[in-house]
Image 1 (cartoon, rainbow, N blue to C red):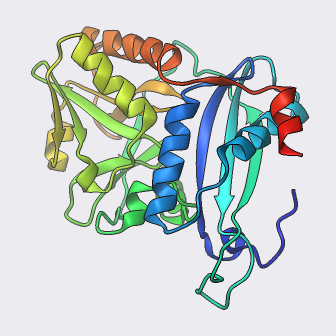
Image 2: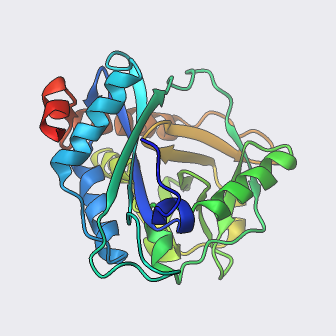
Length: 280
């Protein structure tokens, strides 16, 4: 789909997106992704799209990309549509749904930890957009570029109060003294789908979890650090300049349990030709 120049998502970043893992055409945790999309629409006062239309768009994207087999990333974007003057939306916005699909190979089992640099670009925890997957991702993009320029792979983003919030496209976790820590949602954190799977897996393993407002020094003193999102699952990380942490048995068990729970739990759907026909 070619977006018109007056599309508010293109012109102003007025909209939301979800990135969903597809395995052989099965959209993993589709129900949770769509529930978060609807919550985001409510937060931005944007009419929620017809979820049948969204599913049809995802199915069509997979088919057109030839990715109905194997592992793929499906990005569904919902824009506020066209119209309005300047910043003001039209009285009755007509959201536009766009979906794309691309290959998403799994990280190798022996992949080294992600090296994290602390970005100077802050996460604004006072903004509703900090807890939504909005189309305006420029801060995250710039933080990632800053980290890469410093020789790291990704960035830790602090919030305005200086507390660790997240990586540029992943939730952040660390372990210390047998407990699992992750920044509280109030820190300006996206309510990640895989984040939930990690917390649920920790509960199943009897690991105490703390959703924390922490200091960066706590992260530096952690026994294990890792990231999570719907595409990478759980991936070990280390702060740039810090010595590589030894293998952490509990963190590895947690990573495996979280992935099993993520892939097998929640509402997943098969994207099929029937869905594409339903769109027309």
